[in-house]
Length: 124
Image (cartoon, rainbow, N blue to C red):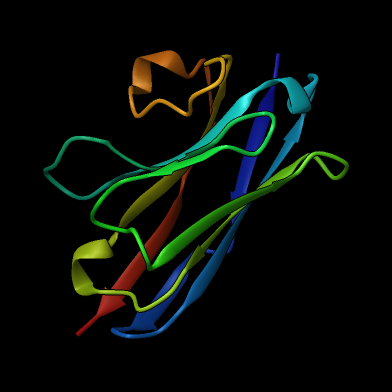
């Protein structure tokens, strides 16, 4: 079993930046793909970005060029740097982990482990 705990959310003005972190415990984290999803009020959960065990990344078109995912297997952490934030980025951000092979799929069903979420609010 892998336990995931997110941190780093908060309130920021449009154009600002935040850094989210996800700490993993209880499993061999380095073998898993890690990803960030988000869910805004009244909307479905959506994929933001993912990184495979060996560092291959994938991100949603809506965040390309603004958000960067990275991982540190030695520290069992995965991070998401959010730059040039927009009000539409407001959501609860969730960390997820799963065995997805050589591609960080955007399908939430591929991820077995989820954190509790951290709120990101972007004011206009």
